[in-house]
Length: 197
Length: 68
Figure 1 (cartoon, rainbow over the protein chains, first blue to last red):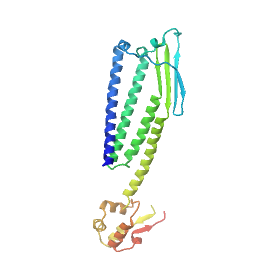
Figure 2: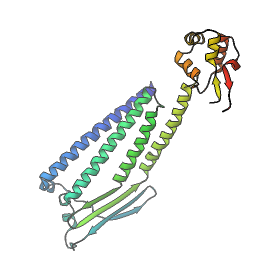
Figure 3: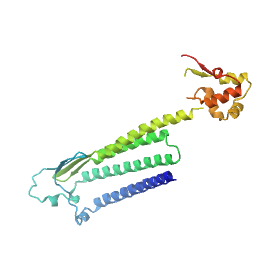
Figure 4: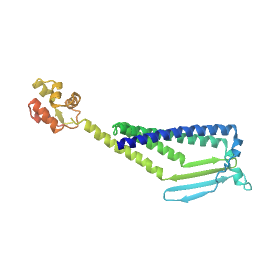
C-alpha cells in the first residue's frame, strides 16, 4: 500500500514535470517569436545581462565567465550595451535551439523515469526495457549536462561566454548507468528464475 | 549444455503424455516443455522427486551427462 502510494506520487510528479516542460517550451517559443516581431518591447524590462567576469574554484563546481570586447567601445556604458534586445540574431537562434533541446531531453527523461516507475508498479521491475530506459536516461542527462554547462551570447561588438561545470549532475548520470547495470543483473536472475522448473 | 534431459524417452517407455505428467507433478505444460527441450537453467529437487515418482524411475534415468 505504502509502496503503491509512493509510486503513484512519483508517477504524478513525472506527469507534472512533463506538463511543466511542455508549458515552458510553448512559453519560450512564444517569447522567441515575439522577440523577432517586437524587439523594442523588451526595452521596458530590466534586461541587463550580468557582465561581471567570474572564476570561482569550488570542490563541487568550476565556473568561468568572460567578456570579450572588440571595436573599442570601452567608453560606452556596459549596462546600456549588454541588454537582451542587443543580442545578435544568430545568438538568439542558438540559445533558443539550445533551451528547446534541453526541454525536449528533460521531457524524455521524465517520460523514461515514468515508464520505469510504471513497470515497478506493474511488478515488471527487472525487464530489459528498464535497463534500456536507464541507459537512455543516462545519455539524455549527458547531453543536457553538456548543453547546460556552457553559454555564449554574442552582441554587436562583444560576447559573453560562460562555462559552468557542476559535479552534481554527473552523480545522477553515474547513478543512471549503475542502476542500468543493477537492473541488467536483476534481469539475468529473473530469467534464470523463470527457467527453473 | 552437457546435461541432457531424457524425459521424452522415459515418457515413451511409460506410454505417458506430457500433459498427463504435467498434471500429475503439478507444473504447467509450458514449463515441462522448457525442461524437455533442455532450455531449463535449473530443476528443483521437488520437481525431480515428483517426476521420478510419477514415472517410477531414478533421477539418472532422466538426467545424463554427456561431455562435449
